[in-house]
Length: 295
Image (tube, rainbow, N blue to C red; front, side, top):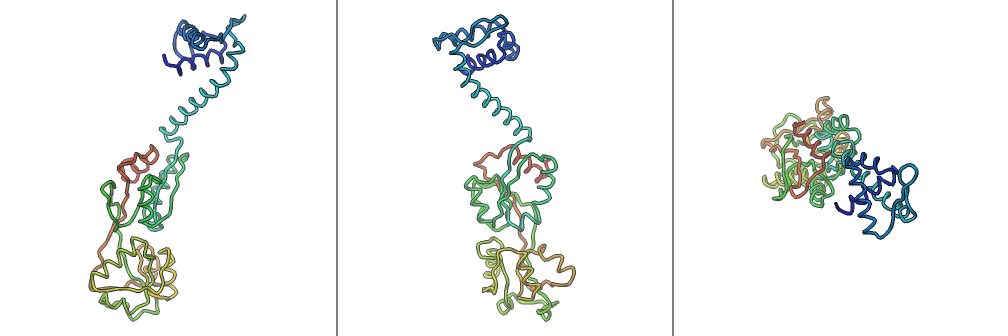
């Protein structure tokens, strides 16, 4: 029996003031409790208990020791309790990285479902573009990220494409002459463009596609969010480059229209990304199961 077990027996004997009650609590025999107490007293060189009219009571040395042992045992048992709660998904946290786009148009329904099933799990979402999300994953600050292609797939990353997305250019009534026309991509160079900032994967993807087709854009406005691009386009400040779903309600209502080109803009994907070098906790694993339709 190791020292921790010695102190555990001592703790229950002191708390119950009975060797028999301690034995029952620990599911061991009463002689085993007596022997353990005797061995601990021999090792410490101090008498810890004396017999009382009913059971046993601590000596002054025993009371001093019990003060510290009780704190340690209580903390250990509380730790075991919290661990069981975490494993049973009654306690814990999930840390996720996601952009406005991936959060709004993919992740949100899964977070809602997860919260309904496991309301005691705290969900932390760090809102950041794809490059920053991948950096957070690399640093172990999040359990997984939901990002949009393109991005550099490091060999330690596990990447699962989960949704196809489409990039479009949208405009309002000021640009009606361009509606229902089949345009060359080069015509974009003549238009005031509203786009995301350069540090985003969406901007990088569009810039690369256009460059491959001999087109280089110098946007009139570079904004932090796709929602703002749509608002700028609604106010006829330019032609917005966005993921189609951001502008869908305005395309359907006719307040915006989609520019058509003789060269199709290739579609891309939302992806769930994990770092294979890191082990996620039970809560993150359960959320990933829900996302991938395994739970």
